[in-house]
Each structure stands twice: as structure tokens, then as C-alpha cells.
Image 1: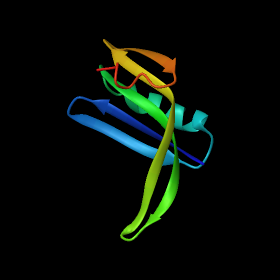
Image 2: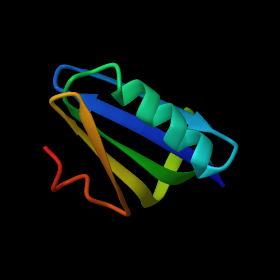
Image 3: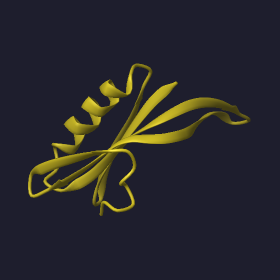
Length: 85
């Protein structure tokens, strides 16, 4: 199982995948999110699946969601991505 992370900060964003624990992905996501005054981020479980044109990821449960506003970051266990603008 892999862990993927993504950050959405308006017209900017970043993402990554790690083969280590979701804790490492969370650290990467929080570090990327800290580079923006506002935004949101999440860490999801993922697995690599074969595809005709290469490999793709199939995403599983969201294990951590973060919101950054005014330079402060708040995290929540689980999926709060849709509720986090």
C-alpha cells in the first residue's frame, strides 16, 4: 500500500506519493501546505494498478485532511476535503 498526498492552494498545488507509512506522506503534505498562506491538503491510501498506457493509482480512504488559513494549519483525521474550501 502506498500513501499519496496533495495540496490545493488556489491556483497552485503539489502532490506526491510515498511507499512508506502515511506518516511520511502527512509530513510531506504539511510541509508543502506550509508554503502557502491558505489552502487545503489530504493524505490518501493508494495502490498502483496496471493500465494499457502505463500505471495508474487507485485511491482509497483519506486518512488525514488539513486546512490552512491566515498562516495557521488545522488537521483532522479522516476525510474533510469536500468541507474544506
